[in-house]
Image (tube, rainbow, N blue to C red):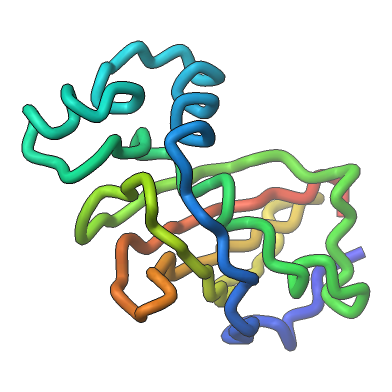
Length: 145
């Protein structure tokens, strides 16, 4: 079934605040196999000019696609048929340990590609104080829609 085109342009309320911790950053770096010490060692991060450990560039995926609006039954997305199409990030600064962030997502595109549905979701990752850290662009493909 095709995704509901009425969702194009729809923004969802900000997510619940997520506290970025050194432990979560280290676990993510371990999961992706990146040994960079600025993801694990506060002194190494400080020597590189950061106030604390920083997260790998793809870390915001942890929080950016968790918006419950994407599970709205009226959208019609079948997660069992979803594959990850593309992902990119535009940063204003790195994500750091101690940041408390929220995500506001907007569906910017839905279109058919053969028997598949392509959906693009843009998400602003901001501190709870309102500072934009990065914008994520995620392309989701629902196979055989």
